[in-house]
Image 1 (cartoon, helix red, strand yellow):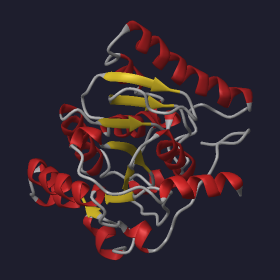
Image 2 (image 1 turned 180 degrees about the vertical axis):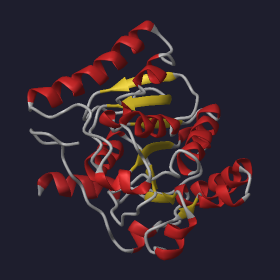
Image 3 (image 1 turned 30 degrees about the horizontal axis):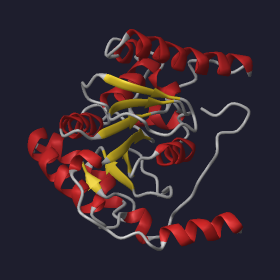
Image 4 (image 1 turned 45 degrees about the horizontal axis):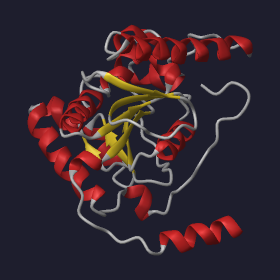
Length: 261
């Protein structure tokens, strides 16, 4: 209770003030992916991530097991040899963690992914890496680390939606951008923006979905969709609540010993 009182005393003096887009830090996450993920929502996040980094901002990609099969794409984009070696360890440490618990490294894709149209581990991994665009990797963080550098960062955390989203928020992200083709209502303790990969999901679950990227396969140019997406993210960063906040869905989950996909 003493720590909570200290946090309250500190937080109650906070006031909202204008800051440049270069100060924005976003987490990139996907869950309940489907066959449209790699066509609509994930490339949209990649385009936004590149835009944000070009403004001096920060994007963080996590869910390391989802990278298996496309990890060389990230390794080849490391800005330095040291970052390359850190990325190699990031991937291999998680593989060794799985094997130490008798869990197959290639357990993905999940049954829900397969039902949605994702066929292989590599298929899912390529979708995962799309979310971070084409930027160079500027930082690699362990689980529980805080952000230290701007640009594209890689964070060690599992693919589990809530565990990964909690890790993104804990490392210093102001919001989590979460793409989904199957849908989920969850939210962590920062705005958790749900971006649907298809318009059917957005129509059927308006209380879950905050932004519909399905219009991209309905003849809206990706560039126009990204412009609307940027405007919406700025509004959310300025205080407009997303669905998980409106419904008071704010949860946390900590990475525990044992296999977490």
